[in-house]
Image 1 (cartoon, rainbow, N blue to C red):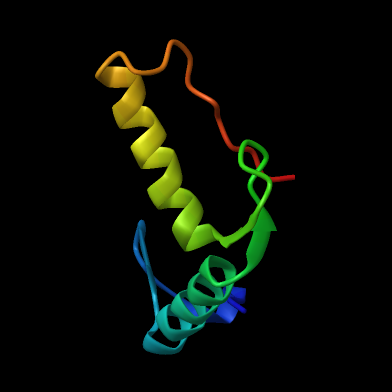
Image 2: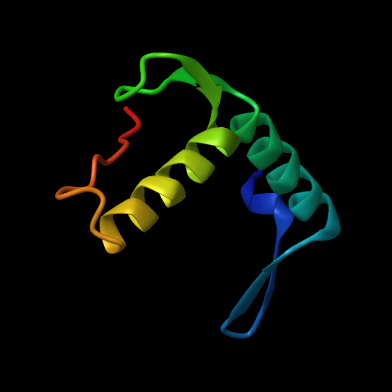
Length: 75
């Protein structure tokens, strides 16, 4: 989705071109909509929802409701 030609180089600085940013955001949104099975709960959710679930689990750990944080790992 993003190629070396999507980068603009000026001196030591590097930035994404407008087309590169568009490709990056498109890839990010596509990934966030991908469904995966959550290992703790066993149901399919999007990566967007996984971020919310993991944040809620972290909050439960901080407040003492959980004794360990059940992490989520991608392949």
